[in-house]
Structures are given as C-alpha cells and as structure tokens.
Length: 564
Ligand code: AMP
Image (cartoon, rainbow, N blue to C red; front, side):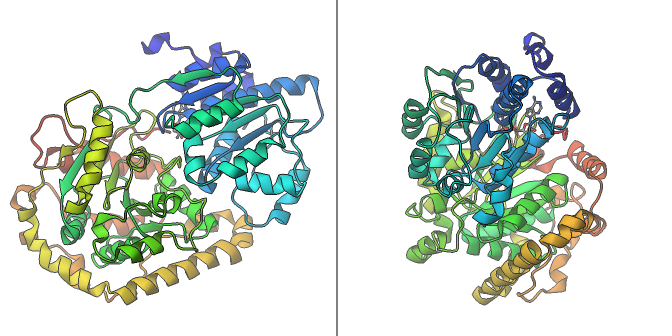
C-alpha cells in the first residue's frame, strides 16, 4: 500500500520545496497530503476533514508555497498572496514555523509573517508594510489590520486558508470572519481544514468555497487502537491526586505527558501538590503571556520537560459549559473562574497545537464535550507515533464519559475506552502522604502560586524579550517548571520507601531513579540524549502496558521519536 502512495517528487514541486521536505525527514506524504496537494495544485478549492495530527498543515502549506513560487516566475511585484486564518496564537506560531521550515531554501521568494501573537497593532504595521507573501493570523487580528488599512487584500490575494475551521466558530470568530470576507477579492482559491464537519463548517463552505473537492479521509477522528490506547479509571477527587502522584512517582506513566485539568486554579493546585513530592511540572494556561506559552511548548517539544499541566480552554470557548465534575462543589464559582476576564480568548492548548512526541495524555478532569476529548487526546499518537490516553472519572463525570464512549464507539460494539484496571488498594500506603501533601496546598498557597507565576512569566515575557532576541542561547536556559514553593514542602515526601511500593511493582520500578535523572536533566540536554533516555525507559518493561490490565491488547507503546 505504502509503495503505491504518490511521492512528493511526483507532484511537480519546486526543487527547493522538495529539498526542505527531505530535510524535515519526511520520506513520503501523509494520506491527506497525498490527496490534497495535487488537487490544490490543479487550482481546486478544498474542504478537508482530517484527524488532528495527520499532517494537514503541510497539506495546504506545500501548495500555497508552490503556487507563490510559480507566480513569482512571471510577476515580480511583492504582495500578500496568501492568508491563513487560525483560531489561536499558538497555532499561528506553529503554522508560521512550519512554513519557515518548508521555505528554508526559498525564504527570499516566499516570506511569511505571523501576526496572531503580538498585542500591539502599530508594532505590526511595519511588518505588513513589507507585504509578506503569506500572512498567518487570527480573524480578529487580521480584521483589525484591514480596518486600520495596514493591510490591503482586495487586489492581491490568491489563496485563503481557514485552518481548524470548526474551532474558529467555537472561539467566537464567526462575525470577524464574515466581516473579513468583504475585504477579499472576488476570486481566490480557498482551503478549509477542519477536524469535524459541523453545521457551522458546512455554512462556511457555502460562503467560501466554489465547487470544492471534499476530502473525508478518516472515518474516525482519532487513530485506531493499534496506534492509540485509550483507558479510563473511576476515581473521586482525592483518589485522582493519589493516582497521579503514584503514576508519576513510580514512573508507571513514562515519556512526555500532558495532564489536562478543567480550571486554572486546579492546575496550580496540582502543580503544588506534585512539587511536594519533587515532581516538577509546567503549568500552561490562558493567563500566562503568549510569549511564555509558546516558549513552554517549544521547550516541551525540545524535550526540556516531561510533564505539562494544561488547562483546557474549552471552558473559555463555552463558559456556560457544565462545570468539571471533579471540582465538585462551588459550581457557580468554577464557572466564573473559567470564563474570567483575564482569560485570553485566543488561547488554545488542546486544539491544533503540535505538541511533539507526547506519549500520554491524562485527563485529570474529564472534558466537557466530545470535541474537547478528541482534541485533547489528539495531542498524542500524532503522525505515525504511538500514544496512550488515560481518563480519571469521578462519579459526576460518568455522563460525560458515556457521551464520549457513544461518539467514539460508532458502529462497533466494543467500547473504545478500556478500563484501566489499576488496583487502588495496592497504593493505599501512599494515601497518608497524599493527604499530607494536599493539606499543605491551601487555597492561599494556590492563589500565591498563581500570582507568582504570572509575575515571573510577565517578567520573562516582556522585560527580557529584547535581551533574549539578542541572546537566544540564554533563553534556552530559562525553565518554566521550577518549584513555586508557596506551600510548605516537607522534604521527606520526596522519598518513597521501598515498603510503600506495591509488591507487584517492586523491582519493576525504581522510585528514586526519577530524582537522579531529573537532577541531570536540570541542564537542558541535546535532543539526542533525551531521546535515548526515553528509548531506554520505553523499550524496557512498561507497567502501564503490563500492570493490571488483562483485557487483551493494552499499554503504552511509545512512538518512534522521529520528527513528527
Ligand atoms: P499537523 O497535523 O499539521 O499538525 O502535523 C502533525 C505532525 O506531523 C507535525 O509534527 C508535522 O511535522 C508532521 N508531519 C507532517 N507531514 C509529515 C510527513 N509527510 N511525514 C512525517 N511527518 C509529517
């Protein structure tokens, strides 16, 4: 099958583009690329539904770049030829990065500017005056520039891409998008990329696309169980903390892990809790300055951190959504906490962002919609890599679990989320420590941590930005997973005495090895070193795979750490 796949060099692409693709280590196009690139090069409008992580950015970026290179052979005049609309700043940055990689050998001919991230319109004006060939931005930002006449598109635009179209709606960009269309010329080629084909996307299709080719490549929105293992485990609030502590401390979850929580306050609570045990983790949420957020993702992708605790922005997109069950009490408060005014509407962690080589996604709090589940879990098992998703389910979250089950199971009778048959009673010995740690993480401590981190990150983000522009190597040394320490840390909690380790796991896990490794890793390591240490872990016995679950194929086969 793979041998029959149309290859990049058979698509009539410019040599410079082919060289960049080869440099990225892409031996062949992904399915969406194989189908979309030739059609796009023929000039067709496209509506593509492809699951997240399927290589859809390059599926539109390659034809966009090719078309610009071709136009430039006849028309020398510099103008904006392509506009790529994205729902979040993080995605904007990633799309720009991907285009930069693909134009590595023709960067003079194809210039790209991402205008989604910076706050100040006037600061971006000079960039737009240079008329970059490709502009990436959120609809609101692009519209603001069009209204300010910093940007004119009505005569020059040849291509429009709407990426993650379904999310543009859930982030409330509908009106901006419609207003923006009035500034575009009558004829241009359009690509609409979307993980789901919602009614909104269908409506947008009518508005934007002319006689489009519709590509629905994947029946399922997530990879199948050969690539992605999905588990759930029932546990209430305290047990969630107990379980995450044990899984991470005993390294039952191995490799890079994204832990999703439902509110910013909970992310700091969890970070401070793990801090008590000497487990470092970064927090990623909409309150942090965009520069810090992007830096955290970049460093995570480079292998600096093992754990990110991310607050799902679903609640921002839909502030009226049912509160996370795990939060239990104080529903009203939770809701306002989620939709708070400090939140950045264009923050997107579970959506579209390319976290690379993520082995596991843990839903500490279960997502409130099926869509959100798909987007979160889609952060692992990307491209050809393997991954595991583990969801903690409190009794109040059971309804949400059934909805996800129903949506994912489809016509199959077998449930997609297998029970993670972990014997909680075997880790009872850890409960005392867990309670001890939870007691130290008071409301006051969480509040202080939150403030401290924002102050710290603002400083990193703004004041040091110019310095880091000149000294990029120093930026590498800046870590985001340092202890925040507003809670009293009891040093003894960092150690795990052998007698507490469940008998079945003695000899399999070494609770102290993580600490030694972490010390070494405090200095950023070259990627190769990180990869080989992962491989060592992964190739060895993997408890998430072998521990307790006896229902057939299971586990956390980790993907190739090759570029994804
Ligand atoms: P995307 O769906 O665009 O977010 O891409 C997901 C990941 O797949 C990114 O890390 C890309 O670098 C990677 N990728 C894209 N195209 C290919 C390809 N043809 N071969 C291998 N990896 C790819």
